[in-house]
Image 1 (tube, rainbow, N blue to C red):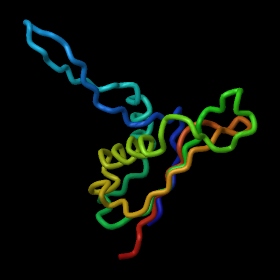
Image 2 (cartoon, rainbow, N blue to C red):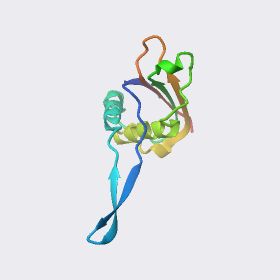
Image 3 (cartoon, helix red, strand yellow):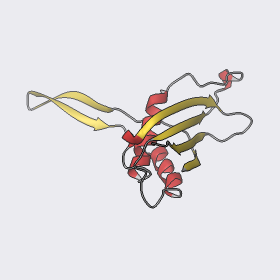
Image 4 (cartoon, rainbow, N blue to C red):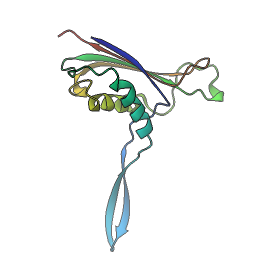
Length: 138
């Protein structure tokens, strides 16, 4: 089985859980919070993936190729590859976690191979992510 789709939007990485120290009643406490900045991107991934989710989640090994098309800053007119933040691994984690939540596969531990590329837009190409999932014969 081969699954291919495009997610339009500006790709954002999976945010890290953060903690902030504070004094409450004379005692040191930590407040833990989660940055919600990537939620719009993750919702776009969920909408795009929902249209292609199989009736039964994939339960075997898969190879995933993610090609992120990032906005091109004016200072990078000639660059092809995006080498700034967000990091490729954080971008991939956000997409893989959403694909697990929508039921594409049983768990993202089924991903046996992963290729992540980050490139800049070219000639009006939309920003987003090309997602390619291929089942691997056991």
